Amino acid sequence: MKYSVKLCLLMIVMILAVSGFTPNIAKADSSEKTRKIEQFVEQQKKISKIPGISLVIVEKGKTVYQKGFGYADVKAKTPVTSNTLFEIGSTTKAWEGDNVTNNNHSDSYQKLDSIVTILCIVVGYSGLFFILLTLKVMRKLVRKQRIRTSLNLKRIILLCIHTLIVAAILILILIGLPWTFIKVWAPTSITVLLYSVITTSIIYYLFGLLLIFTKSDSK
Image (cartoon, rainbow, N blue to C red):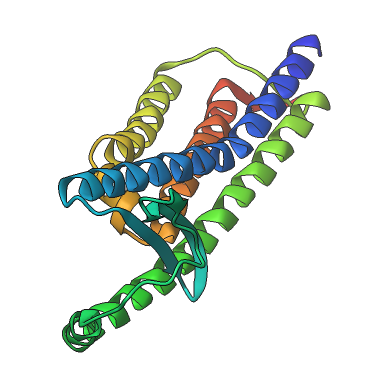
């Protein structure tokens, strides 16, 4: 009984820790992305000897970033703000050309974002499903409907296969993917999907460990 209670408490703590893992990382990634953007703007401003720049980033029709760099009036030391007016000149020609040539790319980007969003929902529900199964197994442990068991050859093989599957998924995501490109250029939904897969994989692994190290009490 004491072992079952300890195991249940450990699983609850690990699940709660995993559930809080994704938001914290996403927030850290957002801050890191902002830092890289500001560093790039400052470098280009210095290279091109531009006195002031106003940068606005819009995602899905919403302003997600807005900041002024440098001075609107160098002599008066007037900083650039979101309300600073700039002469647009012939800049619209570049915008129009970009709209014409990249219209199909924009449509593909939106379609990709929609597909990935659906995948995020599927993965999220899968994680919730494994959490419920894990809680069900832990309840049986508390009620002594399942008991601890030693590892025989079959369970050792299952443990190895189970570990290799989860390890392969985590290695592919954490090491095999171009995270620098994804964080800067890919839709935000892709980053959310990857962290959702990581979280769900960990929950799935914990659920598998419970099944491998315990068995139904036949008494």
